[in-house]
Image 1 (tube, rainbow, N blue to C red):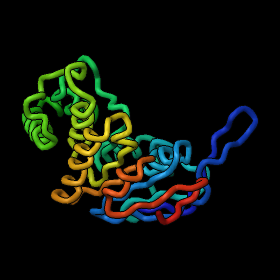
Image 2: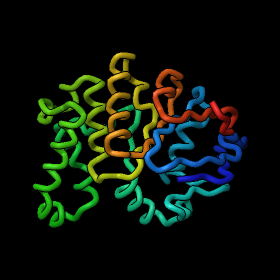
Image 3: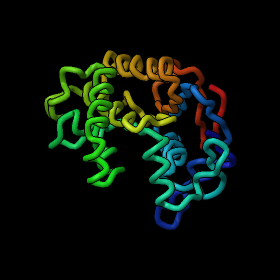
Length: 227
């Protein structure tokens, strides 16, 4: 994954607020990369551009040698469903569903009802394996209100991995957690990177969290600098 000359601004009334100003960097296959910067530095904006949730004003985002930022909406949706997993600071779990059901939601969205029903045993087995992988073997039937913050984030990570993505994009995955719980989440991410060779791009404002990655880059005034 790579970017070339990314620019992004937002409008506030009649004013244009520049956020990203010529971002050039690459993420290597199997790498755990963290992007650190102060609040409001554009970290989440950059991650959203990488995940095709937003489009740059100028520049390109490429994945496996192909430009992806200019794809039609349906193609970008397909790309996110198949190749990108996304984890956010606020877990976005559906409150009426169990942890297991939440992990299964990407399959329900991606498949037709017939397709999901035909493959339901395979999906359920995969979801159960992922929940066990992140340490929630005994919490599969619990709903979000019955889980701690760290457990909800683990469930969100499992959900992001259901489709076996090539890249995990994590936006402040420990930002809503205390330090001890945040360290546990970082251990989960490090193990996924090390044992499954999962490429991870994580943004954070916490220097200690950032340093757990293989490589750190710093976002300063809309530009990437070596940390």
